[in-house]
Length: 309
Ligand SMILES: Cc1cc2nc3c(=O)[nH]c(=O)nc-3n(C[C@H](O)[C@H](O)[C@H](O)COP(=O)(O)O)c2cc1C
Image 1 (cartoon, rainbow, N blue to C red):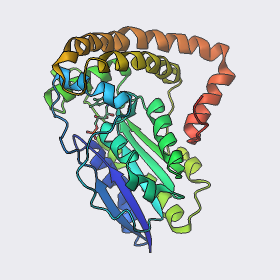
Image 2 (cartoon, protein in one colour; image 1 turned 90 degrees about the horizontal axis):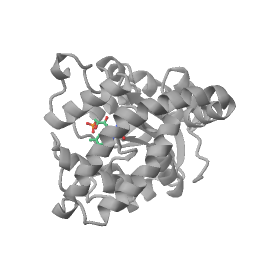
Image 3 (tube, rainbow, N blue to C red; image 1 turned 90 degrees about the vertical axis):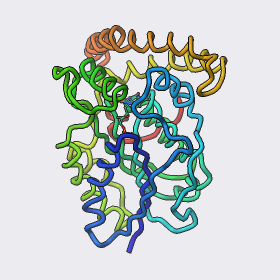
Image 4 (cartoon, helix red, strand yellow; image 1 turned 180 degrees about the horizontal axis):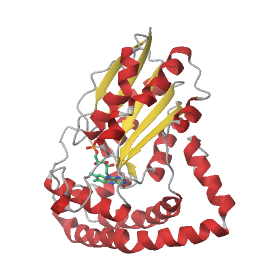
């Protein structure tokens, strides 16, 4: 019997549902023992979020500063044949609890020389976060072996309003009855078991060579070309904002409130002004630099890791 360690965090329960959907065929196979670890921050993040608390998570999330987690329940000294890490994106980075796991000694123990499959549940921008996660996995001696991404279906501008209403009110419903339902579609969550079916033989045989292409054939990864450049640009600007806010104090420090408010204004501008422009610019660039952009799309879809550029 093979053994799979599954590690995840979920604030609203969305990623929990995705994890269980993917795990169903694995658990039902009778070939794999599944050990599940749900990460729990010592101090839970608020839900619903206030606007300030939402912004206050930014500097630590983006700079990948871990929070304190409750002690793990899994045995880090046990032998696991593979690891499944499910994470959500916070500010183009893995969420803070996931960063806390990735920077722990226990993660190093379980990932070393092991295939690590990643399962992302986010709104729509995961490329930069995934570069960071792959870097952690490789640094810990693990092998990125399969990536699955579930995203909201809504177009960017409508989706951002829907998700903001969900995060700030705690209600997962159509905002004002006109915006799309926030979050990942129920149908996409329920049909994610097809990805688990692909993982069973790989966990069993230890042969992961064709897993990503099989996953991709079944729609596991969709790379939106416009977000490649947009995320790169926003990351550079986020870097400046994170340092600027951070220099006023740590999480929850009232001294950084004014800067957090300015950051919220910037976020709104980035979403409503910069993102549409980036979409247009990318579609022009796509014609001019078709080869380069196609190469980048393939790079992200194939789940390779080229190191820091
Ligand atoms: C503070 C915060 C920042 C977020 N930033 C991003 C982001 O940069 N890109 C993205 O696609 N989704 C982002 N999201 C959405 C999450 O990835 C995720 O879809 C949502 O929080 C639900 O996940 P859950 O399973 O933890 O409830 C963010 C959510 C939060 C709370």
